[in-house]
Length: 152
Image 1: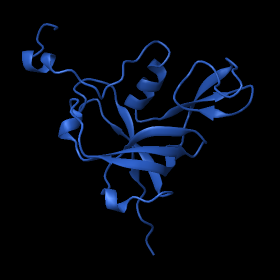
Image 2 (image 1 turned 120 degrees about the vertical axis):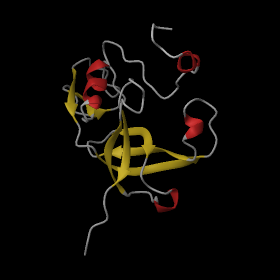
Image 3 (image 1 turned 180 degrees about the vertical axis):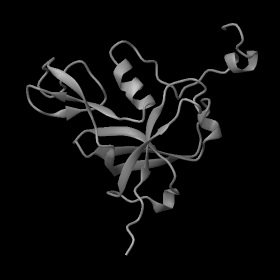
């Protein structure tokens, strides 16, 4: 426990925050700035997510970070009604989801700002970030919300 850390906060582990390392630091720094990054392979041209130091398709190590648009479509989801790990218990029910990013990769995430009854496979989503302020000094985490309904 660091000096000045309230004892009750230090005693409760968090299971919703990443543990960045030297390789993933650019990803988490961008998320903190409200930008989503993916990796693209220069050898085969395919994008992938989660961040890896090599291409999962052709095994090339010639991969670079690139900005993603933040646009996605809902591939599948599940409504979580029970999760005893802190702080998820205070968030239930929540929507765990897999989305197809516009750039091609699939990403595990959470859908926010939408009742589960409003979800449909293929609906348009956009990235937003659960901020460091909510994570009590932790990293910002990308989550997705539905695009606004078009007006007629």
